[in-house]
Amino acid sequence: MARRASTALAAVLLSSALIPGGAAFAQQQEWFVPNQQSGQPQRPAPQRQAPPQRAVQPNPAPLPAGEQPPAAVIGIVDVPAVQRDSTAFNQVREEIEKRRQKLNDDLQREQARWREEQQALANQRSGLSPEDLRAKERDLQERVTDAQRVFRDRSRDIEQAAQQALQQIEQALAVVIRQVAASRKVNLVLPRPLVIYNEPPFDLSQEVSTQLNKVLKSVKVAAEENTAPTPAPAASRPAQGQQQKRN
Image 1 (cartoon, rainbow, N blue to C red):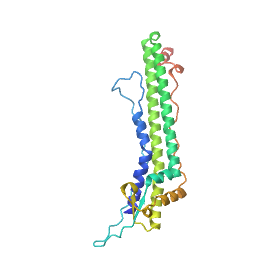
Image 2: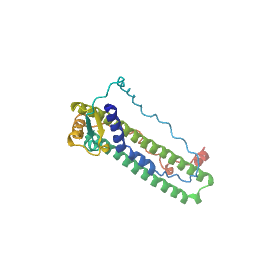
Image 3: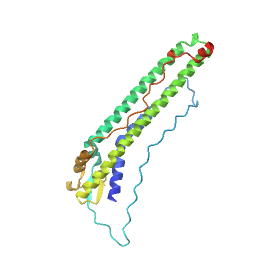
């Protein structure tokens, strides 16, 4: 029971510290699409394979009928405090936040570029034939749609990298909590937020922090894959209508 509780504690509290940034980023994304009508069909993004799920550990066998459980020897762990002291956790958090910030900066830069190109196209409207105008608008729309897919893929990759790094920290923390608890002959570990009051000897947090930093000094965060630049501006490529005329 104590083993399952310590693992669940690590999973819930650690994930709450890393993952919300990705959700906030998704909520803040406002994709700029020139001349897009509401309800206009978009090309679906390719399906990406989810990371493999970890095998579920079997539950321990129940106590035989009539046998009493052992007397509870309680320990308390302040997981947020362990996070603040963890060199591996802070390293992962800094790396993920750096990638999120770069993604946001790239997104804003691309959106500004699309707006500039749309304005340039509007200024050229009177000097273009309807065929050439439609071709240029279609070209710009396709490149914006491709850019949106790239940014979505990059955002998804960042959050998957955070999840994978988080799992490594979670697993190490669960092992350390069990080891520290066993060294103190503790058979029940509670998270600090659930405890209103406790005497200092019940608190295992400092020892858990010290041991976690010994066994896990850093975590390798998976490299980003979707960092390819967006297609070149329309000015560097002939419109489709012009290509047809040449042919």
